[in-house]
Figure 1 (cartoon, rainbow, N blue to C red):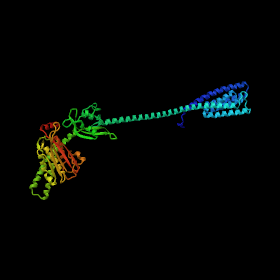
Figure 2 (cartoon, helix red, strand yellow):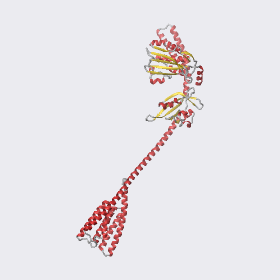
Figure 3 (cartoon, rainbow, N blue to C red):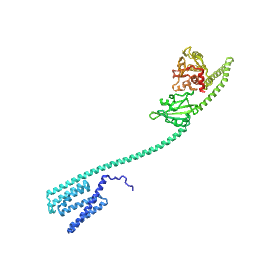
Figure 4 (cartoon, helix red, strand yellow):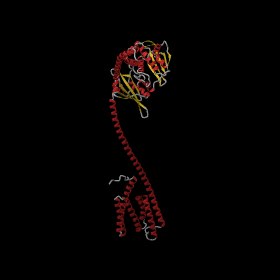
Length: 593
């Protein structure tokens, strides 16, 4: 049968009461047994058989109390002791009257009863003693009790009762004080027990937390090892910095790519250890590094325009992607940068462009022949209307294909830098007028207004072919994509450069009121084969190579180009072209090679 685990633990009050009361009762019973035994022997020698018999009965009662006490039944033993004492008191009065010895027992009895049974029990037995005293008084008045030894009158009995009450009050307050102290100790014990229980619970709770933390640390350690293994297995360079741009992590690909040891970069400032280079070998300003731009503007960055140097100090083209690291509340606490060696990709792209350039060049000859023969037949042959229509289609499509091949060949030559630059003095006004003249039929057909703000004497030392390609593509795009009755504004001006970074040159502005370029597509304007969505859905033909060629040509000439555009309102392109000297071009070409 299962034990009852909810049994109440004894308090300190109960433990103290039981211990001292049992000790006192045990000693009291031994003393009483000794006294009554001597008294019984005395009565035997005095041949007082009645007194001796009563003493024997008292002894038996005391021994029964001792037996019960040894059995652990304190309350029963104390009750038997009090009854025996009361019987002894009554017997003493009946035998000896109100002697001094009897009076002594009247005072001792309530003290013993109070100590054995507490305040409540002592009160009951005190009333019992008072009743006994009153009964004895009545018995003495009626002559039933002998008072020959010491004579007591009514005042004496009242004094006796008063004395008993005073003793009882003293004992009561003493016991009450003892109970309060015991209760205080009990309360403290209970508080200590509660605190102990709380401490035990807290210890268990902290042990549980410690176990949980230990388990979490093990899990985090495993995850860290997995992440480290995953990071090191990535075939691209990965690096992380904190919000102060201090390098906190880098995999082996990053170290190999930049020719570093781990101790050279971890816990070092990013700008102190990482270097990026332009295509010509000039070091990129640290403020333009994609990672630092990400920390500054809290946006992702991507570029494939920069290079790093390997252990042989060779320039290696890299594609760089950076992203900010944010907390759940959006606070940027660092950034991650991914490097990718794109040498092979560029080699493949170059081989592809070379192949396509060669193929395009080889296609130009048969297409030129087809176009020439078609044009010859259209002019000289006597053809039926249906045949003339077919032949005219052949002529127009071959011309369109020749134009497409020419555009692609121009773009490929620019990208591959096949042709060397040949700078010559050019009159900007004459170049623009020639291109506008070539586009005059389309301008007239669409009833466009051409606004000129061009200086007639403005000259520039540059490559004639690239200059004409830039101006022709920009003006022809403005004319093509501007609806009827629109306006195209062409303006030029000169600017003063500085010797360190920029030479003197010209600014060409071409502004139209055409369909514009959607904002979300403007970042692709100078990409190869790109055409905006609104241009694709229109009936206007295009190859997507014009602006790409413009961007490459401007870059080749050391200039700059930018634009502003709003859909259905128009586009404004601005080009700056510096004066180019032959020796400068040769130096740049040698560096690029």
